[in-house]
Image 1: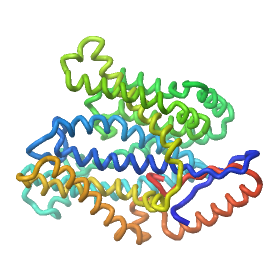
Image 2: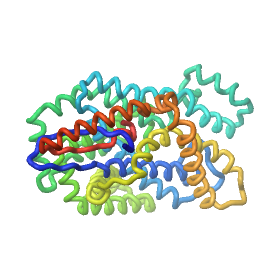
Image 3: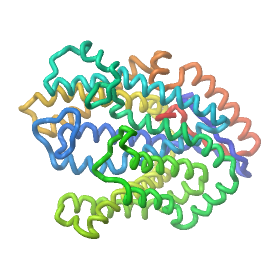
Image 4: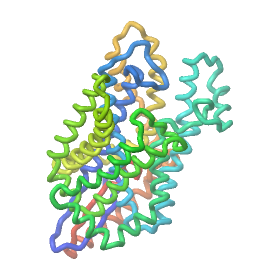
Length: 419
């Protein structure tokens, strides 16, 4: 059996087996987007990053702006659906314990082992002359970056997701047990009411968030901490009431149309800063969350329509995507430190080389040094090989018994990102 499965069994008069593969594919596409976006950061104009090339590209800046508006909202939304499936047949405490092993352990490993090389390479560009081991001792001063050498850098997403699940586990359990909540969510599936899920987030972003101040350090990031949370909750609600996912599928063209128009408006204001005056200044802010939600809803809808199919490579990618996310930026920063020293290559050559080599090296590390070893799998938030096999066998028995009784079976890959 390829990958790890978790089955949610629901009584029905029809004998149906449906694999929720579109969520897995969208997760994988999101992480591919993270790779493309991060690879452009060293070369994008007007974007600060750990190591910057002497030349810069405004086109890469525009590409990154558009991708940034969508990639994290989509990941948080899908993470909400994953939390729902992981809570099946588990208590709130059991769910929290599982999140500690899948999120907290990799986060700590990342902060102590994976992230420090990024900070070291950045320090070298700032004039630091010591070797890595001399630098590494400073990590244990536990002084936060940028003044110190202790940070979670790109792993902030894991930290935020862990806190969300830790705090909201009892709320999730209550929502799953409440028929009243499910009926209320079912009402939202009528017409285009599902888009009301975005309203609190759009209002919050417009009134509280500064589009140019994402700190990602938790302490100074209260506005965005709530903003990201609302995507997690929306993902949980939409998978709790499957009719909402059906509604997104039906309204996918409308959602992407709104997302397209909003993104064009955002680019207009970026390229014409003089237009951001008066009420248009407010519109410039409002368009950002509108674009984010529209693209998330549209991608979920189109994914459900066209990506809900299995493929032999999906099981491998589901296992690889989480360690890939943890590792990729460290590999990239080390590469970029040397690539930016090559002055006879164009920005496009450097950009494409950064994408290709980061992908090649990161996948190689996963395949040869993480996937085969139980200890490494644990440190990177993966289920052990034996445990995965046993759970898969048990799940197959459960689904077989369910189908024989004429039940509806909904399947989601648990061996996927942050599960």
